[in-house]
Structure formats: C-alpha cells, structure tokens
Length: 462
Ligand SMILES: *Cc1c(COP(=O)(O)O)cnc(C)c1O
Image (cartoon, rainbow, N blue to C red; front, side):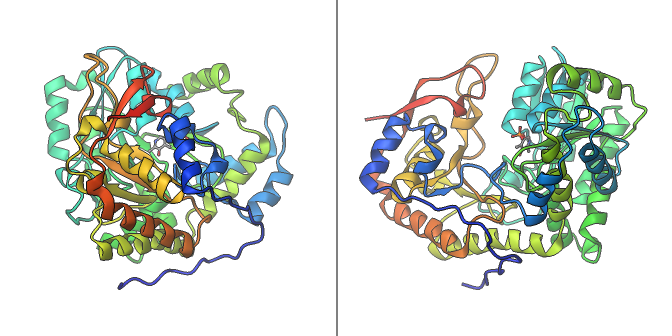
C-alpha cells in the first residue's frame, strides 16, 4: 500500500466506551429494525458511520466556549461572535443562524420557488431535493457525466455540466428557473469536489439569465482542500482565501454546520447583499419557524461552539489529516479490488454496491443490501445512497433508478482511529468474498410519502 496514514493533529482527552454485540445479536437487532439502519439504537452500533453530520468530536476550545455561551433571548454576545466569524470567513453581508441545514432550506426556498418553477443543481442532497419539492417546484440535477462512473478517476467529479445547465435553462425558460444550487462538496455524488473554475462558470451563466445562485455549503472546507490540492493555480493560496473566493460566486448560501464546522448541531443561511429584499423575508420566516433572528433555534452555547468550529474546520493541518483518513481507507480498498466512487471524496467512502452485487437490480436496493451486511459483519452502521434513498417520482409514484448504488461509509470528524478504519476495510473484504451467496435484495413493506429512507420498513426477498 502506497499511502501512509496521516497522524492525528490532536490527542484524546475524553473517551466514549463502545460495546460490541455478537453476530447473532446483530442479526436479531437488524431484523427488529425492519432492515432500516435508521431504526437501530446508536449503542447497538460498534462503529457508527451512518453520517458525518453532527457526529463530530468538539475540541477543548469549543467545550470551553459552551460554558461561555450567552443565553440572552435577543442580541446574545455569542450571536455577535458568530456573526463576526461568519462574515470574516464568507464575506457575506447577512448571516442568519438556524438549527440545521434543512431549516435554512425551509426558510429560504419558498421565497424563491413555487409551483411551476424549477431548481437546477449539480446534484441535490436529499433534504434539499425534498424542500424544492415541498415548495411546489421540481429539482433537476446536471452533474458532469464522469460523476456517474465510479471507476473513472477524475478531479472535480462534483462539477456542474455547464452545457447541460444552459440547455435546461433554455428548455424550461429562464423565468421558470427559481434557483441554481451548487452543492459543495457534492454529497450525493460521493463527497466529490467542485472546482473554482466550475463555480465561476456556473455563476456567470446564472447571472446571464438572472437566476440567483445558492451555495449548499455543508462541506465548504473539504471542498477548499481539494481545490488547493488539485487546481494548480490555488496550490499556494490559503484555505481561508480559497473559501472567500468560492463564496464570492454565490448570492446566498445554506449551510449545515453539522459537517465541516465540527459541531453537533447548527446551521447558517447567508445573503451576500445585506440590502436584498430577501433579508426581511428571511427574518420573518425565521421568527415564525425557527426563533428570533439572533438565535434562530440555537442555544447561545451552540452559537459559541459554531463560531470557534468555523475556524477549526479550515485549519490546514486538520484538513490534511481529515482527507488523509479517506485516502487511507480508499487505498486499502484499492488493494482488495473493491470499487468505490473514485478518487475518494471528502467525507466518506462511497462503496459501489452495484459492482459488489451485480446480480441484484436497483429495485432490490443493492446499496441497502451492503449496508445490512456491514452491520451483520462487524456492527458497522452505514447508509444507502442509491435508489432506496432516491425514492419515487413525486408525479407518477414510480420507483426512480438512481445513477449509482452506493453504501456510504461517512467518517465522523476527529472520532475514529486508524484501527477503526482497518476494521471497516476488513469487513468489506469479508463481504466481497461471500457476495455471490447473497442472491436477492429487499422489498419495501411500508414507506412515507417523502424522505422515505429515514423511516421505511423493509423485508428480505426470499
Ligand atoms: C447535511 C446536508 C444538508 C442538510 O443539513 P441538515 O443539517 O442535515 O439539516 C443539506 N445539504 C447538504 C449537501 C448536506 O450534506
């Protein structure tokens, strides 16, 4: 193996004991959970890779900040500290704290989208797609073609296909496109980064047609690391300056702070132009749905930890270690001939379950099959990013076929060690060896109308 593990740029001060169930106990737990990993208890998972969202380990500075949190209802000092950090890093005129990313979507999307409208993205994340649909509009993905070929190694597989984007604008009419959303990194395509060049080009095109551009910025710091690593003109630019330029191309941003900002709860919503008529409407929606605009559903201590996390998340040593973990795990899979969205992205390894189970069709959910097997094999909890997650066409009710069938091993920040990564690789290798003995996938026995993967019940097809 050519890759060396990048040592942790921190040491451990507080530990959280783990419990390992037996194989037999796990078989019972997953059946009781109706083969939906969201129904498992956290304590029944040995290594929990369900998501990197809100599962981060905070630093001693952040915990100290928790004690300093100002809980004033209006105008708390923690709010002003967060505003100062947000404006310094993103260069936006107006920033609204919210309790998480989807709250930002809920507050702002209905102001820009409605029935008959469309929103274009490189690729919508699941809750973002849901909020487009809930506003009455329809989402359209225009990711570059190479994103859909997991074995093709190319930089910036998260990019927007610019030609396709313009085609869609012309076909639907620019007046019917309410919003362009650039998801950085591109979560659903495997945490794949978007290049600065692509952000620039999308912004030029959006401006040409008068369409506002929103950055869905959950993993902006990881995206900045990839720009520095792979876009030659940025190799000597600081991460902070790269972040500033990335955000300069957006008119607004929605952000789940539960990712790169290394907290357990929080989100932000930004509008570049503080005088935009959107600002008053956002404040009004926020007061109705989230809380007064100087806390937006967060406790003062949450805002304090978030303000500190904004800086820790863009630390260059931390980012090298962070992406180094992905590269280490991916190199172990390369050695074993296990396919994944490659090159590996920013927040996890997206294993190509369609390649591991070529005999299982999309409507039997190969991604979900591998997730269930990983739990049975080693108590590892992951999640499907494939047809099971994508769900049904909102207009016809028919199962959609996703472009990929991934099982996502999302890696929480500053939580797991090299030994844990080895357990993940070993489990995948063991499953690959017996993959041909798993003949069929799953059927859905109950599902809610939207975001079904969180709640649905499944059963193995006999
Ligand atoms: C997590 C995420 C969201 C939603 O944020 P929550 O904090 O989970 O509500 C939106 N977009 C992207 C790209 C995300 O990764």
